[in-house]
Length: 133
Image (cartoon, rainbow, N blue to C red; front, side, top):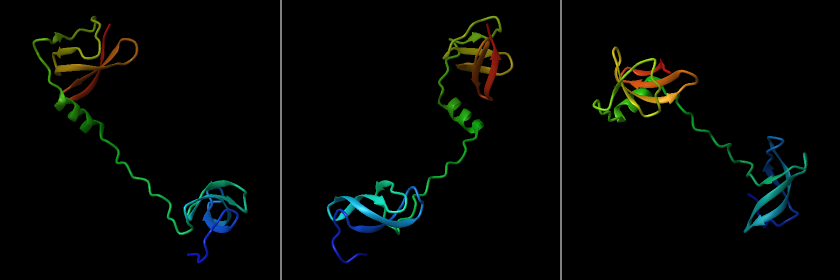
């Protein structure tokens, strides 16, 4: 810690964002008793004041989401009405939200239109790519 009160133009040690190390800086602007903006004496870059002992912020590590688990959660949230379901046929055109009934996979809902003549349908087994008109 420094014993004297800082003001604009004084030298202070700060963590430089460009040099990526602690160097001498000149105070450009103050907020109360602490420097808010400084200029590096080495690279002449201007940035916010960062105390020399400040640790770099740690980023949160995201765990990859298993697609099967995500699909199962999406399936559990669906409330499908089998009375509105239409029998699946490759010769029909479908839109997102349509409920279809497939011979092998059972009841499903169209989740996405995947290019020409393809749809993504969410069944209890997971997301399946199906052919359509």
